[in-house]
Image 1 (cartoon, rainbow, N blue to C red):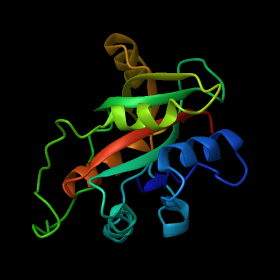
Image 2 (image 1 turned 135 degrees about the horizontal axis):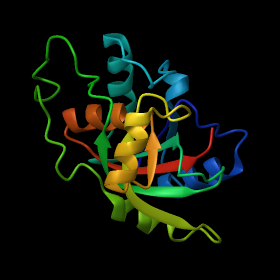
Image 3 (image 1 turned 180 degrees about the vertical axis):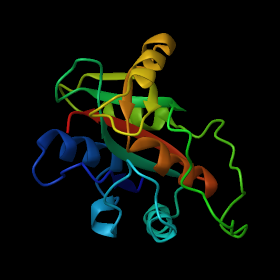
Length: 188
């Protein structure tokens, strides 16, 4: 499976991130850093050019794409690995603004069944010593500085983590008709 790494994932300097990315991708598949494509910040609205770059990174032959991103898990420090089963977008914004190109996908893509947690769990279960959790992740504007509203919603709805890098990529993938095996790493 083709794997994208979020802009804050350092595949060269973070052993856990590199191990998870390689485990998710498999021995023969590509791992692409969004930072290398020109998409550097997912915590703000994306430009049309950045959405086009993201689409280019998502394109491939497999209908399921892997995605490795950063976020926060409660009070936990670095090292927690979360297989994403769904998300709740608390940002109230979409990367799909402006005129729609129906050749790429529908104006309002369905988010039902977009996640493929079993694909991620199957691939990562072979990694020795890796402790995985799974659950729903809240999409927030800045996971390093969660607002009072976001914190209240996360607690009330029982989300396992928050991320400012997850939702935009998943929305664009859904727009393209792809499913996502998403994995969140806690920490910056």
